[in-house]
Image 1 (cartoon, rainbow over the protein chains, first blue to last red):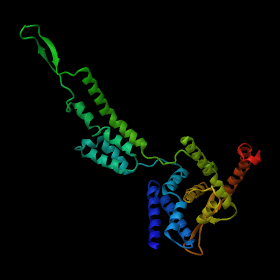
Image 2 (image 1 turned 90 degrees about the vertical axis):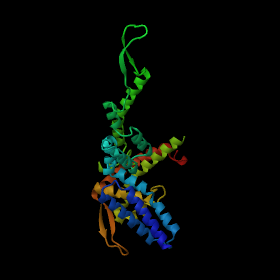
Image 3 (image 1 turned 30 degrees about the horizontal axis):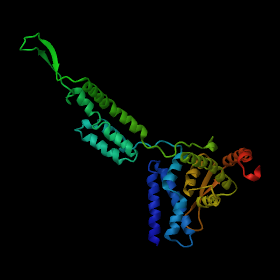
Image 4 (image 1 turned 180 degrees about the vertical axis):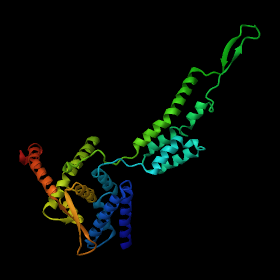
Length: 216
Length: 118
């Protein structure tokens, strides 16, 4: 039975440590030490140590996420700091594509690896706009084609009617609107996404509450 | 309906959270206690603490605010323990709260207290 109990406690402490990953190292260490001591004291007081007792003990202690949320709330509710993963993800997604396109994929991988965003937010980061600013660049330089107009002087050869400038292959109104919209999305989208992701970077679960009447 | 219940839960959690620190200060005003002992003292009373582990962030907060202080002591069994005690600032904060709390509690009880209060 003993190994199971140890494993449960270890798992619990590991989970707690992970939940506290965005806190200053010293404070994280201190809090996990305190909880570990609490567990040790509680275990010492158990008449018979078995898996059920340990599970009850850990349940009374509470979900590690809850303890971490409490710590953030009590310690001033700072937003989760952006780590190197998050920063490189944002940079990669925005301009990484210019680095032989790979940079964008690096950003994409980092985006999905990070736990700072929800799945929905990650989808926004992925789809708006794939390649970051590269598509906007391509449209701007005409490399992506857009539309081409062929203009030339034409007339009706049969009747010899007057020559007139006629543009063929030009876009219909709908196509024009489509291309303008696409350009706007490609230019504005990546910036919007970068700002959106930067602001949505996971906040502590309990930011709303700010107590400390005692510290006033 | 569900949303209202959720909001009520959140409100109760906030009330509990806001008053918890004074319960901690009260327990630490007259005698010093180590973490586990303090948590057990609070958990003995129903409805005060739902997750024992959340007391530790509160203790840290109180310590940083200078309302409690701590010192390490040898334990008769096992590793040294960190003992907490209310500072004079902590006792003063507790007294302030007591002065506010009693009339407030009575006022609320006047309206929402049990049948026997009417």
